[in-house]
Image (cartoon, rainbow, N blue to C red):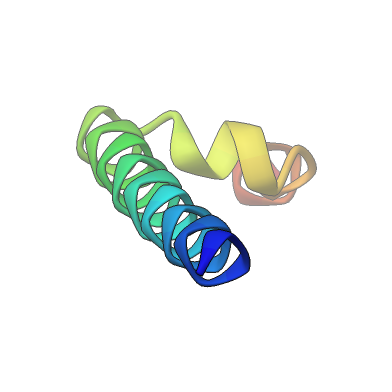
Length: 48
């Protein structure tokens, strides 16, 4: 039973972490910093 509770807690933590990451990425993309975070050279190629 303990192992089952441990696995359930791990799955819940992973789901919460995934939601938080998606929220952070969506907020960053709204402000326009997502390209700077994930694609550092995208701005340089656009300016050229």
